[in-house]
Image (cartoon, rainbow, N blue to C red; front, side, top):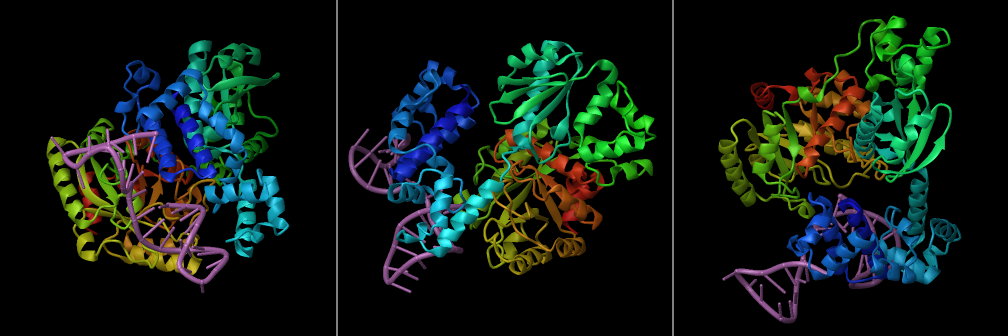
Length: 554
DNA sequence: GCCGTTTTCGGCCCGACTGTTTTCAGTCG
């Protein structure tokens, strides 16, 4: 039982307590403990063995006992008792946007609703509006929310699938002693993936079965046929391992990497069948083409570009010289400024932007002007301590609903760099949103607009803009638009990023990290840029420090 | 349920929006 699974059980218990109507602070204590457990680098078992659980902030005697039980038995008896009073299916209802625990609790107690199907039927029958405090609009919003849930695809985010795919490959290589590679939508770095596809250089799928059974995160073998093995994964979804004899490994890699539209175009050029070859590049060479990077294989003009010798030189993680948007413990991050600077030095960065939240974002412990000045003294101190990395004074300034910024211009002028972002009012009509974002772009102090739409993948759609107009103005003002590399956001997406580059707009690729490990999310942002045909020259944080400073003084 | 050189009780992060009301509860970030 790893720490993440323990955190999951604590969160589930908290949700059930909340639906039951328990004291909100008690509920919150379980959630805080879940966060602490999830971020604890050491395995809980070791901490329990030393009897040191209560040394973790937010864990007292009660939660220590609960965690010990979960770690040792894999279950939590209090959850099982609670499930007698509160049906577990109610947890699904919490996923409906605008429906929280209080509403779920009332729907259950007053209408006997326990499932999505029952709730949908009750809403259609006009029963929900009969409840006190509910009306026709609330009922319509619930139906909309249920429709949104139905539209969701249950695909894995690339941030979940990619690390699991890498661990599986590592395990299979060790166990089988043959080449094993990632293929499919994970290799193309799509923002979400339906399953994980791997290709192994073995003659028959049966040879893979024992190694797959013992692989991390695999629950059971689901299918073995002539071509591949499928196994279910703990994270949901499945992994398919294709058996490819070494002589046709290259061909199978092309076929299973896809996309299907890209492969269909290749097959057409080849006159019906892909050449049988050992190396992937030989497939392309046989068709008179240079090798095409997997991120480009979406039938968006890459084959024509390859034929014309016009494939772009794509950006790589190693091109980045710094990260321009991340958070420290001064706002809602977990790491100290010094830890961040040292982590940046390890990654070979030349510079790093400490962009904590501005005062208006209270939930994220945004900084007011007094704490800001205090923070700047700390930044100066760490700059002397870690001379290899230049820390820049920055802020993630909140764009308020009326389009104004959370700091006055005279404060903004004191920052080295200003990141502006919207966290609220994302459902405003396009006209309002355009007024806000164009105002931000035209503010001479703002250097980067972060996660422009505010979307959360598969959870929240995000703001709707006239993108051509956004990019036209950004081009004129020289403001960069961010590709936020947090795998839950990936905002801008590949399509808009490609438009941005074509419009001549500067792009910034940033981790938005709130702790040290998340600095490595930067690679997902680089993937989005690659899928958008972007090279290093369009990205401001590939510049050496003097060039970056020159842009900031534009 | 946790926490405490303000320590064994009484706080705990908070403001805005939404849909429903006519003064507010619930949700969200």
